[in-house]
Length: 469
Image 1 (tube, rainbow, N blue to C red):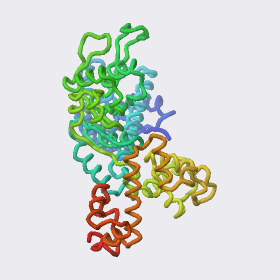
Image 2: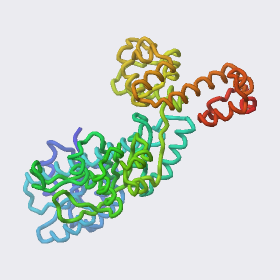
Image 3: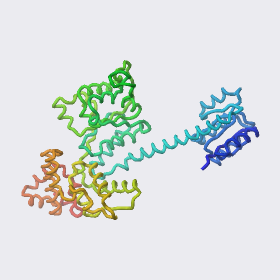
Image 4: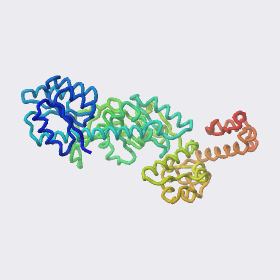
């Protein structure tokens, strides 16, 4: 489709000449004065305006101001005689995209028109893509109705617009980077960069250069200046995942940046000021690293201003069906495939499985199942072998022996499973469940509190009063 150009000029010869130059590739509408120009501007919604500075009824600058106030998205190129170039420069300060002096060079005119239209198209595309990214990480796209996740959403909303440093903890695969992005894209910094760096994935010899950058010649392989992640994130947010893997030397330099809001490139001599929102994450217990002197205490307190703990998927089982359906719908949409759904047995296996890889493992399992399924219903036969053959107890055994779960945590998970099963078999009456388990009701209540078995976990629609008795 041809782009529409509005030409406002009182000289008929100019209008005729420009129409002849532009019409082969554009749709051109013309006006001889400001009043007609404004009417066409409002009615035709042009993609570009050529506006003469001197018009018979209203000054060109006045018309420019009116056009800019009504639609700032439409670029305006000023047309001027050589003696009024200064006024044209003033017009650019008021928002004009460019200016041309009479008499025109035909190729220059075509080039300026093409460049201005292309720049505006690019600007719209960037704005659209940025809006898509912001929408992707909006609160309503964070999946989970469990109390634990509702608390996370509430905290994100509270801290998003602050400059406060945030520490996100939780097992691998729980979605720590997703939460970090949600914090950034729901803040006033959403238009600025979000830079993510996995500290565990970068060799120790390169991490300092990656964070702070280096000057040319500062070491053997430094053949050119490199801008570091802190500098790239200026005005926005820097997310450092697996911060517990940083060496003591790098921790010390990171602490200085957080305190002083400035750093120096490797081989550099001048400090560089930065305005960066800092978000960190780890799947390690930093308190244990502190006790072993592997993490600086002063850095720990500097980054642990606001702490968000992401629960493991096995600790919010009510979210598993929601997440499964979300990931399936997302995959089908991306690949433009026919609708699929999960069988009841498949969702039951999802809910019972231990998910040592958490949300990431769930998404991968659904991707694999969707590939193997050639009809509309995903059944257990389409699932990875670990889900098809392993019960919750079996998976607990496997992930514990594989070193992915501590013995203490495995015992707690098994005990929690037994208690929930006993409550289910006794219609969620705690007194009867305690008898079935061979313990007192008081001990059952104590174990439920210790294991984090909440009212929501044990609530039965028909026994809302019995369950707490």
